[in-house]
Length: 537
Image 1 (cartoon, helix red, strand yellow):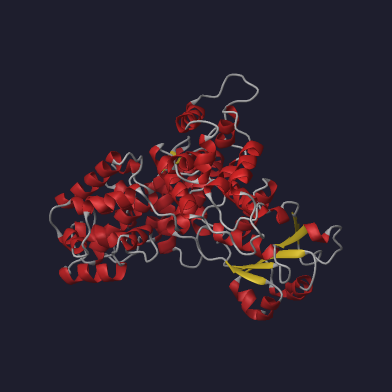
Image 2: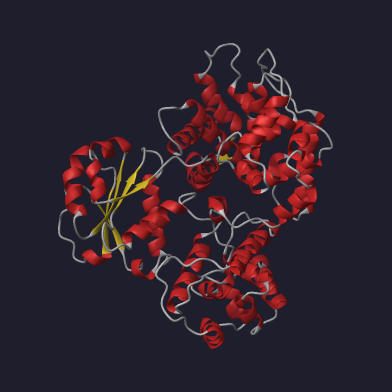
């Protein structure tokens, strides 16, 4: 049943079990599932419930008032009640009927609302929720939050940035569907291939836009906001992606979203060149077409998800700092293992791919250490120095660099930064915290192929989730995602050593690592394996 569940939905089910155990209940009911959705303060379940008018704190208080704690902590497997099983089945059914290829936390909420009776139903009913209204909310997701923009591929992000640049060049103080359309021509991918196949060019679209909208009176000075119709197009791009079974938003989905929105300038421009059905049909054809064998120019495949997961705010902040006139150097402050260096690698990749504003397009990152950082740079205006893992002894060199050109991106830990708070006078500080559970799992997914090749094993999604959840619980002296990567590496080595042939690393193998370490737990402490619902069947 759990194959179609997203990482966040599986996490909510795991937390429902923990809620049952924390309340000394030997069953998992609808009340525990509702508590599992909001157990983590910044979870997607909390965000979705808040978006439909159910505050997490108030809801938890209502549920807690109806519960009586048991006297004995249950051990071993905790079963679902018949009502809870129906909720899981209804969530799967709701997802299918809505034409979606995944089961997320929003479908779990629908499953709870489908249940005729129970604590969760009564609590949600107290907020006046209507099942059909929530279904409509799921059909039309809001454009907000890192969870939404985290789905965008690098090319899709580049298209939006290129659209913003087009708006600036036209002196338009808004980012509309017409600018997104122009941005799609700036990056390779399914969208631009489809447009060219239909005989639609960037110059023709831009010329027509200038004829109808003209130039603005003065260039915008601040950030350029999305128009209402552009936001709607992005919402429809996500819906098209989910309908096609894709868990990312690429340029192809942006083009489909522009056409489905229908009333914006972008859609009107497109209809002047080709009917909506032809545009959509060409995109679907390219997505479905197998690579020709052999051919000099095979049809483009759907775009891969971004390499750096969940760090878009940090990358955007660094780019903004580098574009400043003064104090235009960045100091990333975070614990080792949080992925500080990977953020800079993501920025370097984006520069190489042309996915940055025009003023950063010619910038080159140059890795140095504190002893060589002061050496002369041939082109200081187009060079950004990168100093990794700055230590207390490097503070003087860092101060000297912060006073002038070239610009600098440096990385340090909180303890070192605390010793030299004056560095804030020379650098803009970019805090780097631990990623969320879902972001850490996403990072491991990007690393999975590398570790599968090294250990000659197959690593399941459940193993990735277990590595993050158990390392977060039991390894307290290190941070995510570094400690989860260590656990994954150790599990791969263990499977290869014990099995001797290519095998699968799953959640049970991850749990075994921690079971060895926790063998001396008190008798009433639940075993690690009990925390994994999908390992119970």
